[in-house]
Length: 132
Image 1 (cartoon, helix red, strand yellow):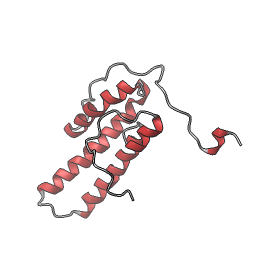
Image 2 (image 1 turned 180 degrees about the vertical axis):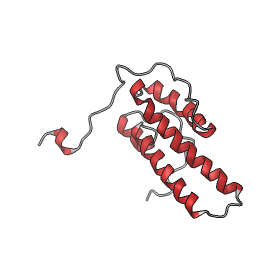
Image 3 (image 1 turned 30 degrees about the horizontal axis):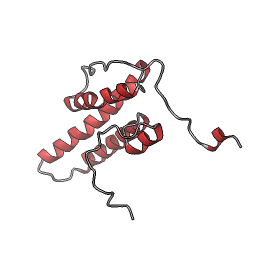
Image 4 (image 1 turned 135 degrees about the vertical axis):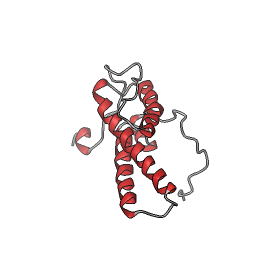
């Protein structure tokens, strides 16, 4: 059986059409989403994995991450009492943001898969409490 038929993804490298400069955040994004855009887009541009065609997906990631944060703030301002509808909506936004983050190499596992680990943005240097 071929190596590629076993589900092994080929190593990713710099894209030939990768952006060299991070564009400004789209005006329609919320302030939380724009903050996420300014946080992640320079990292993605530096890795050379984002092209003009990928910007819609990055916008969707930032919109989902921003919406999850905005809902969290709204629930905290309401006294911290759980609103099940807002909580469920926040969970769905968080799941969507996580899926997009994995797609673009913004999670530890996806960075390792992409060979881009060690970019220095992990603040936690303590051992993994779940490791046995």
